[in-house]
Image 1 (cartoon, rainbow over the protein chains, first blue to last red):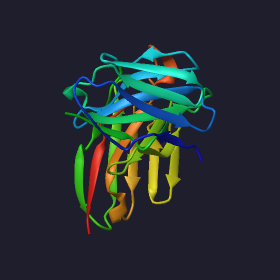
Image 2 (cartoon, each protein chain N blue to C red):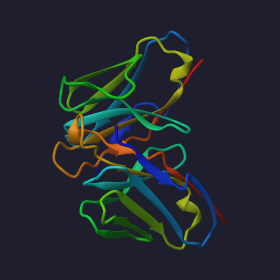
Image 3 (cartoon, each protein chain N blue to C red):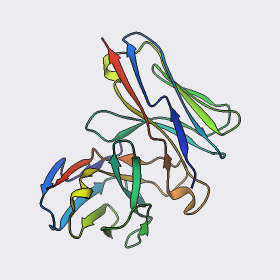
Image 4 (spheres, each protein chain N blue to C red):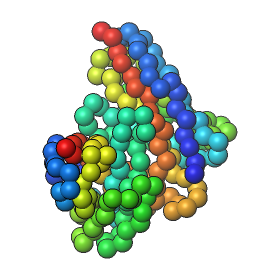
Length: 113
Length: 114
């Protein structure tokens, strides 16, 4: 089974803090993704990476950055957390081959106070 | 960009009832995926469809890839309390980054009354 692990299920941070969300997958997948999920807005893509050290902006990259130094790990960074970044964050991975299936982690619920 | 419209947005049903939900797009999709998200968890893949007209089952769940390739349907038979959650349809857009990304519907929230 594919396993995508997000390091924290719940986080509480202060406004202005630098926040790291970590995601690790164990299936040697080439592609990895970060989404945020908000009520009424569905899943919105923040950033994705199609290979090590490669990254592409998604639909809402402002206020975020990412790092992919190793194939299995994709980190989302909030440089200076703000209250409007309170959300559920979901990481996903996908093999570079066909099928188009993304496998998700359990999510990190981040609250910024 | 492409959008997926899911309906209904939410539904309340009695345990034992059958459920139907659908997803439509203004453009053609080559793949349809159905995910379920339990409360407080990440989405989990239920069914993947790759061919127009395809009908695929996974236990009490059945999904169909519409003939027009612009829609897909998910049916749940004899619902049980653990069916509660949000059901998402998804598919790869055909513009921009190609098949790396998925477009998601906004979900159908299912509540089951015991």
